[in-house]
Image (tube, rainbow, N blue to C red):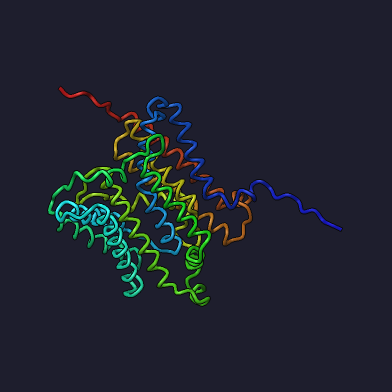
Length: 372
């Protein structure tokens, strides 16, 4: 006698995909809003190309940062690693006559070495990830400033500019292909290899992972090496995109990448990762910033809006993890709890704040006037 199991409700079937559904819903909301507010300017081909080029720059770092954050780490030094790697590559090409085909791999290996140093500072010296990478950020930025001495290095070979802004005729831009390739590689590492499984296990419980035979410290070092190499790749792409590099380049890479990864569903508390979510988070932030620029909202309001999105995303996923620990069941059922009601009220307040920011920014925006 066979017994038929009742089909699961839609809300339960959607539960594993909530990390990707969240940013996709926000992307859809931006598209709808801009379709009403500025359809002609926002949806033109050149602007879509700008969004893709901006997102592609952050994809390699977001892929690597997903592993670092999943294992309860953080890397605040990726902006300085990108700048220092770009400076070193530029000097090798401009001052010492190195081929670009040699200088680019050296820059990426230099980034991996800086990631190795970060990992050793954290695991060997027992410095907390936040403090260790923040200190090393100052060190790497200082080296970049010393080396560059205020110079802006510019005009590089076509191979490098193609990595930053080139396009295969009749196809997508080359940096977009590079970014998507790194995200696909990251998805494979996370879901199909021991490296990804160990990352999630360490983030869930480092003590339990150690007891099962996982070398937690060694695995952490590997994750930081990957993060350093990807930051250096981003520095190479940034140099090609601008066809120039200086010591103060990439000042906000760390905040932008961490925001994209967290908005995409990877938990700052470890143990929860979504590579597809990180990809969607990168697209979301690039689309949001581009939308604010299209609406002629000042840079300061863009920073405020980005901060509000980060806070709301962290609060949402913190609530989701608490729901899992408390055994509240599906997320629809948990919304009926007191904590769920608080989250709904908080979400409504966040939406109201964002709308108010857009309104204030739009009212205070000044249309550019031609000079002369």
